[in-house]
Image 1 (spheres, one colour):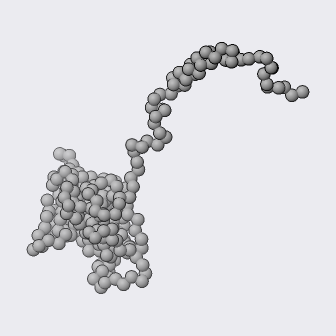
Image 2 (cartoon, helix red, strand yellow):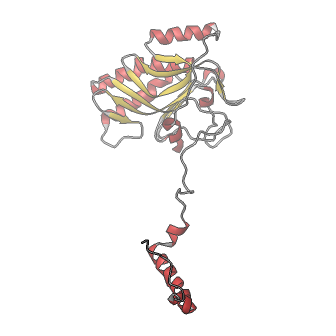
Image 3 (cartoon, rainbow, N blue to C red):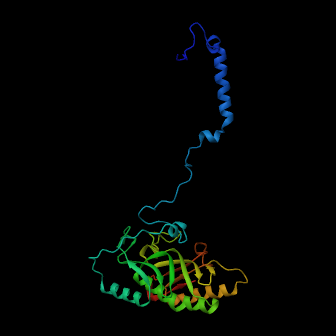
Amino acid sequence: MRKSFLRPAGRRTAAARFPALAVAGLFLAGLAGLSACSVADTLRPDVDVGMRTAAVPARGLQALVPSNPFMAGYPRLNEPLATEAVMPAEEVQCRRQLKRLGVRFRDIAPIRDSASCGIDWPVEVSGFSGNVGMKPAATLTCDMALAFAQWTEDELAPAARWRYLSGVRTIHQGSSYSCRSIAGTRTVSEHAKGNALDVMRIELKNGKDIDVRKPGWFSFREKGLLNNVRSDACGYFSTVLGPGYDAAHKDHFHFDIKERRNGTKACR
C-alpha cells in the first residue's frame, strides 16, 4: 500500500495555526542567507565589467606610442598577395635584393586602413641572413625591410660577434606597420606608412638577452653594443631615436626612412 504524503484532514501545521511564527521564520531564514554571502557576492556579476580583453582597434589613425603592448602582442593578420597582382618594376627589384641578402619574407595584400594609413606593396619579414629571426614578423614596405636587412648584416651582427663572440638569434620588435600618429601630435607616424620599425631587445645565440633600455653603470659591453647600434644605424635610416631622447622612446630604438628636405637626418 502506497503511503500518502498528504497531511491528515483536520490537522494544521504550526505555521498555519500561528501566522506570526511563519513570518518570523522567513525573517530568520533571510538573515541566515545574508550571513552566508557578502554584499560583493550578491552585487558582483560573473564577469568583471571593469576589465576587458584587448580588441582590434578601429580603422583610422590611432594615437598610440610605439611600445604599446598591443602591437607586439597582437600582430596584424595579413592576407597573401593575389597571384594576378602586377607589381611595379622597382618593387620587383627591391625583392630581388631582399632575396640576395637572405631575408625571409612573403608578399602580402595591399593595406589601406584610411586615407593616411597603408602600404601599396607590403612585405611581411620573419628573418634575415645568418638565421636571425624577427619576432613577431614585421609588416613593412620593401624599402624599409631592405634598409633594416642591410643594417642587420653589416652592423648589428658584426657588433654582436665582436663584443660577445656570438651571433644574433632574434630581434624582438615592438611595432612595424600601424595606423597611428606620432605620440602627442596630430602628425602621421612613419609607422602608418610601413616605413618604421621599433626594436625592443636583441637576443644572442649564446643566450644573452640585450634590452634596449639604458643598461646599468657597469654594463660596459652592453653599453658599447647599444652605442654602436645607435650610431651606425644613421647610415641606413633617416631617423634613429632611442632611450634618452624622450619618455616615449625609453625602452626601444625607433628606426625609419622618412624622406626629409635636403636629405637631413634625425639621429638622437
